[in-house]
Length: 262
Image: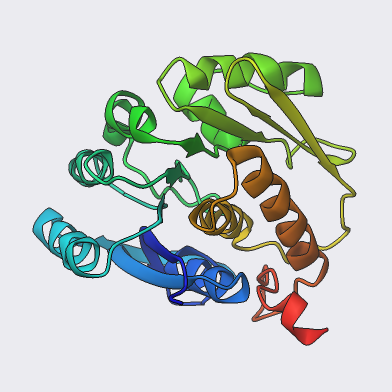
């Protein structure tokens, strides 16, 4: 029996904590076969992003077609897409693929470095979000996309409704930047799932967004429903954050292999 196959379409993080590297580690830990389309190369470490170079659209399209046409996929996850051209090309590719798509609308890095051109925001709203089975914005990305500033749990519902207007089937608003418990809201506009986890006092959280989106895609590839996949992914990421470790002089990564260490 072959493993479920999941494709990440995202940027490379040379430090190994986020991006395609985090995605593939997550997929391995969760028992699916991970494949990758590199959209950009970053020079990145625990202190931040020192440089980023996006790949040509034709290189991204060729990688995608190469994998999907031969190997096939049960789920696709998107991360850093950098430019309007890349956003539109990837939106077109995932729209034409018969598999659920988890869209992590990456706007800024953990260190505050911009990873998406301002000109690409319209393309994310108009092309990418409508192609998403699940969109997973954090609070900064919600503000970028909708103008809504979430300051309390009550605002999460308003933020979710605003993102859903752009067309994803489900949205997971990640409330990790609020104080108190780490609370996320998953909704398709009718059903609501509130996901709570204790907040771990650990600053080594590089890669949480990439890891969560990849974990959701892995669950969907295994045939879980969206609420089941998101619940399982939240549990996995919470453990990975608790086990996050120091690396370099800045913010270290979450531990993708925490379950493998018993």
